[in-house]
Length: 589
Ligand code: SF4
Figure 1 (cartoon, rainbow, N blue to C red):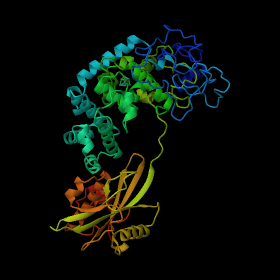
Figure 2: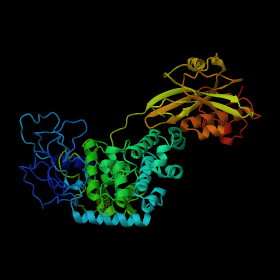
Figure 3: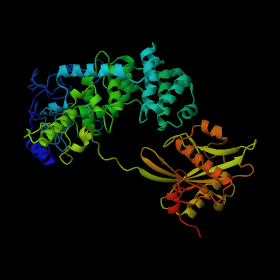
Figure 4: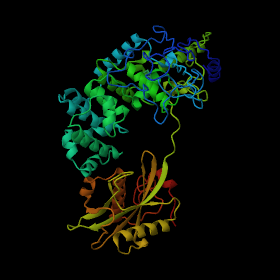
């Protein structure tokens, strides 16, 4: 179906699939909400038609014991609790059920007007058929049992008999896996669990040791918070891990909704969902959710859905299976739909299949019926793609999920100096200083560095760095004495950082001002064993590369400003050129 027809149908609300549980009907009990929200004014006068379409999904008659399901009885963060809204369900701006948020700009509470029930999401975006939920659980778990990867934290979760150790083992893995790939984490995880197999062992470690082991894994505050939380469990909770998602989130610093759900379901068998990036992608595709998947309203719907779907007898395996599916089959680009164990439950897959059938019928000259590939049929549906970004056939299932455009990363430029001296055995030693205990790369060690203003001239950069070093070492540093090594680029999650690398060889001893940051001289091996960021390792690598070039018999390798320290495009002097490169190479005077 072309975008024009899609738009026309969306405007008219028409679809080959009749809309079920249409939003806008007052008093209809939305699926998944067997009980009216506590303290919510609706329900008293509600005319909920239990047993009709939008059947109560399994496990939704009552909240899980001890767990407050998302959007139930909690106001949105920062929003005042609704006393009595006048929201017009089904109209633009009205949030889906369970969101406790009034319509923007509408007067509420003052006149005591009873709030209308929020509109239920259209059936297309729900799992409202208990038989389908059962089948999906069965298919997904059978696939997981056959295909799951062997991972050290899974082994520990399945074999560790001590509940606190088990919870701790899963917790460490979940924190390490945030924003980091499984392949990278395995090595760190094994080392960590070997060094600190229990909460008690971690609580006794120093932050320096934690940073050293975490070095290279990125997002360093994770390790620090993990250790703080372990200390809290030991000192305030007598070493006993909280057992429910709600308690985990409430009591442990650094444990958010997802991590709490993962630990509680995997370690303690609590039937609660766990929605991470992989799960967001899978659920959005399963139910054709094309609204901004990072918006709080959509996130809350996805949590509701995860809580409906989670298998009651194997919640931990089910959550891991959903994540595994997202990591290995339902990947962001080119998902392996044909191998997918839940494709028969996937609305995005059905839509693509119908489009293909429609196109092939057309090719063979048959008069095809209008394909049933429309959006959910509810005008201004808060979960469908926005009208400005209709379905794009070339993307297939990857139309989902959609995210609001990311903010561009902050661009930063920092001068850094590799200060070097000969150690007592003639081997080089480097000076490293410790970063402040808060902020980016808190507590890690680095070469003396100085943030620079953008578009500073080279001469000025040198002078500023020399002044910085001089103040620090208490002895004159000539700007001309700083040797330019090159530029090293490192991308942090939100910062595009360019390190302008210089080096300075020091003869004799230097007395550093003890009032400034802690500092120490380290050999190369000590440098790599220290709590050093990946960016600083790149800086040392660039420096060593330059040193090797300088000491090689071929001279003339003095680096020019603007040249990248790594991956430079020009051939090294002395390198034999291919014929093509030879013909393109500039001729010297
Ligand atoms: Fe993802 Fe494709 Fe499976 Fe749907 S069928 S869940 S899009 S892999």
